[in-house]
Image (cartoon, rainbow, N blue to C red):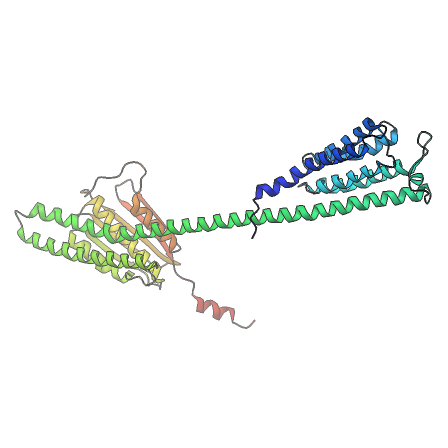
Length: 419
């Protein structure tokens, strides 16, 4: 099981390079202590150490220093390699290794190319004699294969070591990078899962809110209307009280059943896949509102088409909410016209309401209320749309559209026709 923190993986090569540089300089300084030209050699050790230490932090600078050191030795500006110090050129391999951890592909490729150039310069510095330095590689090893062959052999050997170190660095950096990506993906997947759960919870809360509103808002509006009417006429028309109480009891009983079903659905954690209300129940709904005193007209235009059960429930809830809003904001004497137009590619619904005796105070500002938001959401989930606006003449207009389902059988028969 992978327990290494992502930050630690990032800092391992960053810290390893300076540590390797310090160890490199110290070991070579200790090894050359007691021999001549120690100070001059320490300068070379330090330059190579700087290149190693900066290979991860500042790879461009490190690559430049690595290439410049053998060039300076060829020019005679720093101490050239000797029989005991030529292995310091292994610093080229160290720089190539750490530079391979750079995130930029260009830096990695340039580091490999610079390692080849530095290897060639180092081979020349070791194998080509000069008047000031007559003793070179051939004398260190007790004979050689010729200057040209020695240069080629040394350059190939140094570059081979650097290329191998570079390849190992590429491999290790790739492993670390893949693991970091894996951790990022794992964290992202976890966050996606958490977001999905949050969205599901928000969806459930919104669904429960709509269902509670549908189950109670309409019934309570009817109850309030009947209670107010009975209270106002109790002294002059006692028979109205009996009718109002019967209506309140019927509506309350129906609302209680709706709430019970809602609680059962919530406890079962399941969506309502078999809605009870359909467009056929609109007549019963209109009758209930007429009993309150409202004037409700229900019209069907054209031949009714078949809708999905969820779409029929959405249409019923939209009409129910429109009638409830008319009762609350226009009063029990309001006039409502409900038109269901089937003559288009779906059901076009138009509900207009007017009245001047609201049960509740009108909302201020741009707050459209939970009911209208719920109607809009139901229309959207049914594949359609809804608008609800107050006209200049004081008539409140609800316009909605619910498309009819695609006739799959007709589509299949059309696609199966021979060419």
